[in-house]
Length: 262
Image 1 (cartoon, helix red, strand yellow):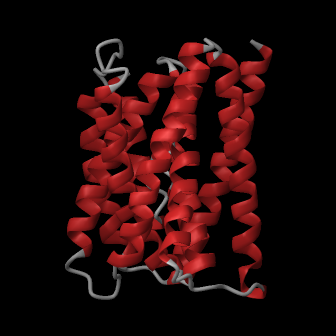
Image 2 (cartoon, one colour):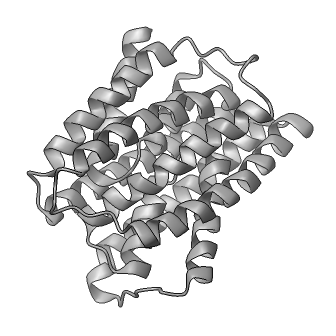
């Protein structure tokens, strides 16, 4: 089983580093599909793996002048996402712990994620016909970050594809730059998520044995993905992004059907 979890971490993190997906958006439905852990444990495994990938990707990005992090905008979004992440995690805890409806929560997560990803896919297929913007109001940017953090924390995905779409639409970034800025935001949101868990529910009730295999997968995936992306054009990255989105939508739909019928 540990080989499977290493491969999941490697595959998700490689795609995450290439297209700014982060990896959590792949890890979450994949671990749901495997069905070995509860939602809370899956969230921790995903966050830790994605954080390791983000660390490596950002370190390698510093050497690549063609891919730049807009530190001002992305930092404001990151702060907003951390605040929103607390609200999203509180909502998640309410449904899974206080109301004790983990099955319904899993269905809601998969349905919301599949719907958001479908909208993102449609946007990227039609974005050449749409106007993009460059938001400058810091309060509005903070609000954008809050919304991203809220959805990301509740869905347990790190926010990758949502980040990329928002950065592309509201900040006129190309796909490659949106990807690395997404990873910058994800780094802080996942770090904050793990700290929040430590001070709220804690890690004592979670089986984290697979972290010993998923984190190395995340590190290796970050190295591979950030190396590959430097050799790709924006068009190639966008194709990988779109194919990945369709794959993840299919997994979430399958998970909804599986949970509903069991």
